[in-house]
Image 1 (cartoon, rainbow, N blue to C red):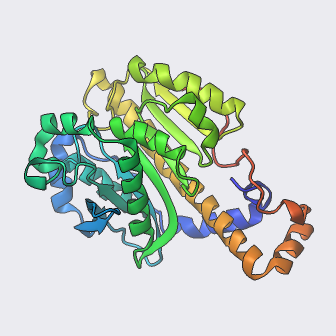
Image 2 (cartoon, helix red, strand yellow):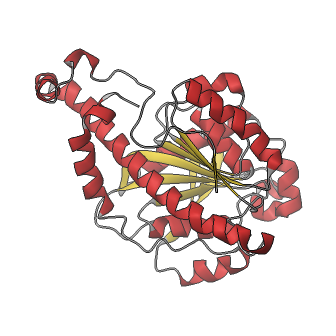
Length: 328
């Protein structure tokens, strides 16, 4: 995060206040898996399939949902579970659009299924097998293509984030180590990337985990500790009694999954609003330095900051609480 994002609080607060006007909603939870089609069929928001180029002749199919707002919207990229791009993931995209984001859910199995099709043709079992064959370079290339496509839409802002679930949660965490322009990463019950890659993370990270999901959590605790040592921005929550995939399976674990979903979803929306608003401030100030360097320096001096430090990177941030794993 750029140093000014901490020191130029008046700019960030003003932009956040303006941005929040487009995000007003009741923060309804995404549906459980069984109600996904019902939400998609009843949604007032525009959703559509799009295909875009990912380089080297590769094409990605994606489900896109647009918010109902009068200004440009930041982009949230959803990374699906190991079961591929399902109706539930498309319904979650619709709920993100209800919160004011352009939501894009790419099918990472585009062209990998039977007859060159994707997740729908592969089915859940086939998707699991195909997911295991994907290479990191291909995944990153497709994510980069998705961010480029999404932020180039006429109604899109230039800020983007990733939100992943299960397999996609791990990919979201990993992508934060590989994409310096990323505005934020949200990790729903996904494993942590290699420890030696954590130093590359620049975006704030929010992790949301079931307390009864030790297979995943055992990888997250040391990663969170290491990120704190490195001065990175990470906030993690482990919800007591909740299991893996608690957002999709809200009726599981004797009510613990629903409690976790009710706590995690508002945190997700609030985190993304703040992170992407701060990213907007960062980009605007960078532009000011290029176009009006003297004005940028004058503003810095008036706010008591060394103009030479403007634009330097720092590992501190006002966006997320730098704290150990929370138990809820």
